[in-house]
Length: 192
Image (cartoon, rainbow, N blue to C red; front, side, top):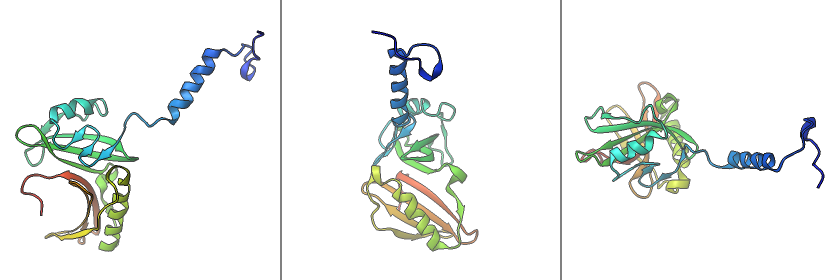
């Protein structure tokens, strides 16, 4: 069989191995990114309710080697903090463990600006929260009807999902700011 014509005027005949390599590269470009994680009813990627925090940290180190250390968090629980991409959203994620080292709460905020934005009013914050919640429908299903939790300095719009997951959009009227949080589980005694 005569050699095939040279590709792109290189003067070298095309080789089957080169074509296979190009095909593999093209297929890899279509595959999901290795750091794109799934969100499910119990957490994000390796950060899941009921899992050992140490095991989650080992798994998360492959995803975010710099930030995957365990240390006491602001509420004194052992905590793991990482930046991950899940369902197309870059998230700053924290997993907190109980006294036995088992994850009891996972919190995720948009990585950009810690999820806080300036908005004109509470209604705009609620709409912002609804849009954020809708991004997780693939892993969590559609949000259930939203609820309002009045707080001393904020108003919280809660978009619950089936199970123990919810999006919370907090409106701070004094600063006209709204922040977002995707929450799984909670610290015992902390929920309404």
